[in-house]
Amino acid sequence: MLVTDAGRIFMERASRALRELDKARLEIRPAKGAIVGDVNVGLLPSSCELLAAPLAMAVRAEHPGIKVSLSVGFTDHLTRWLEDGEIDVALLYDPKTSSRLSTTSLLTEPLWVCAAPSLGLATDVPAGIDTLGRFPLVLPSRQHGLRSLVERACAVSGIDFTIAAETNALAVHKDLVAQGMGLGVMPRVAIRAEIEQGLLIAAPLAHDQFIRTIALALPTARRTTPAVRCVTTALTQCMTEAVSSGSWLDAQWIGPHSTVRSV
Image (cartoon, rainbow, N blue to C red; front, side, top):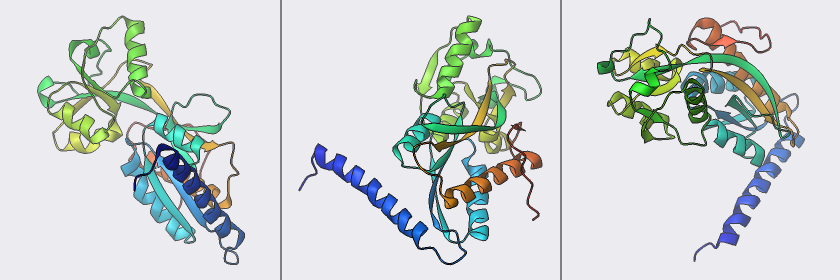
């Protein structure tokens, strides 16, 4: 037996409805005094390794009745999943204004240009935007916000660039750059391990357009449940701690003040 196109659409919609029913049952009949529920959080590839474990551990310690699921994707994917009800809350890069999402800016981080060690970039010497025109680039596909940012900044500065490869997988992106395919543009936190291992070198981009804002996004069409509020609070707390400890390289907190937990 094969599922028809109509059947696949029905299965997708039915699965969403069943998930919502399961969530409702948990919220209606929780244990006395407990906050329970399933919460799916969307994280960005560049910072998911920094946040995933601390978030899961914090929620388990403070709210054991909440089950957290983590989904990783680029901003365009996460936005679509939020609007379609696949996830409950997400971190987004420079989200576009939308009546379907409520967003709160939390931090900014600059973008760096990275390359194989043979290209001779220096961490303490900022690279001009003209660097992007001297070597081929490894970039995400056109629907990705980073690609749009690079194209816009280069167009304004009159920089012509060539693309060596396109990929929407961060691990593949970093590997192609490390193999000398071309330059990459990404936040330094995403390539910390590769820099420490000597696989990549990087330099800050000396251009004011290469700074991105990370915002917390919630859908406006659905009620924010107590479980989602608890997970959102824990996520924000994990982010403030990562920034204050220096683990989130180059990040500057611009969101609401959050008291750091004692460990």
